[in-house]
Image (cartoon, rainbow, N blue to C red; front, side, top):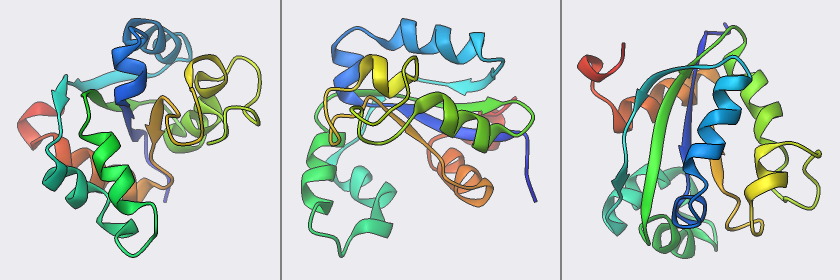
Length: 139
């Protein structure tokens, strides 16, 4: 069942490049309401917990190191058809394959440093949002 919320996280490469404001502007211009937002930094252990689903994959350790290398900006967003619409807004994981005007097309450096995370399902959006935000922080 589709919900009206999704989770996103502006990744360390985009935050350190000073693109947070421009990315948030695109998100809001696309009709998403920000329900929760913070700036934080993951420890390697916390990054490992967030990406536990990838633990057996060859890129897991590198991913955890990258995601704990600098500040991130996690957010919960709200809009009708949130997950699907947001996936369209961020574009393909590989910025070279991302549609013009998508967040990854505009701000990603590579497949690995791809500027932004977006939940791939309603279930994962709820799990990922709850990883970063308590119920009291979700308006």
